[in-house]
Length: 95
Length: 87
Length: 325
Image (cartoon, rainbow over all chains, first blue to last red; front, side):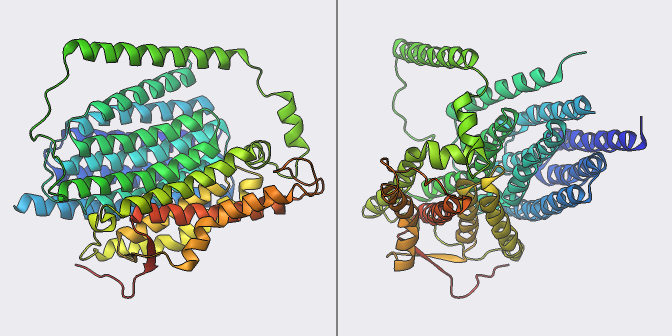
């Protein structure tokens, strides 16, 4: 059990836990805005931990950079999407 | 390690299945689009895990393509009329 | 210890079936569209599990980018059009129960027969045909999928380019009857965040598309994936108002539309010079021949997909950026 294996398992498990939290939030929170809050956590932290764990597993710098790039793009997309959906829901709830 | 990564991918797939209930029920259209957004991120995570579990680096490119195009659905969605007739 | 991979695959298959059923059986149009987009996501994972990253790439670019936005736009057009029948309005009486069960029986029977035939074919075949292995190993291009698309089954690819062109011609015919571009008008104001995202995404998408095109000779990638990605970029531009519809097709766009079919067909005719059959590669061919054809195809695919989404005869870059709240 090398240190990198332990680290990978810990990070991937943390990522999966955040994804679970995001899904639970999506199902159980009362309204649209709080559900958005839950799923952006899954996006940022869940994907981030999984990317970190896989970067440790892969071992190469290029692979780690690729994974970091995927994570950065995911955060950009999630930011804009959450903003747009929240604005849309705001308009609808104001009526 | 490969089977652990595979197990994590399986866990995420079950997550996706459970989240489908929100897409199926979700009273507002916004809820359905949120579920779609979560599923996109879940799919990206699954593809990354599969890329490392199976040793095919091309799947990381597939995840990259998904992530780049993830915002298109939201941009197209907010141009819909605010009162969707069938909801 | 439960074997994980079969469980994953079975869940994937069941999920696909459930999603397909819900897409067809959903009451609301919008719900069906969103379910269809999820279907595309799960389909891409299925391709990945089947060991076909080229197909997963194409599925990602087309379903996540183009088809999703296209269907959502169709929803928007249907809701906005007062003459279009709305769901929940006066409906035709449902078909009789006997007729429904007849339809179920026919569809179920055909589906089962198709699945059984494919299973029988798939289980009875060897892993990779030795002729295919020989053909790929001797070729200048390393990616077996590209070898099949461009060389062994080049005729299919040539006809697919013709199909794309015909789809655009069909669009031109439809435009004579309805104002398609007017069905999804440009947004009055695009939120600045979306605009900035599109601005940032442009170089990333361009580089990724060119990379996928370049690496198609050795690794998963190729003209279709790169062209679909560029088409998705065009879709983003059209959605945020950076591209405006025109009612005529400028010469450059016409060239782009016919470039893929033209270059491939020209190569097919040229190959009669060095062989008895059209569409055969010369003996000393390098990967450069394949890349040239793929470049032309990529441009055509990108232009055609963007025009099909835009629903107009032509497009141009907007004069002034559309800024909104």
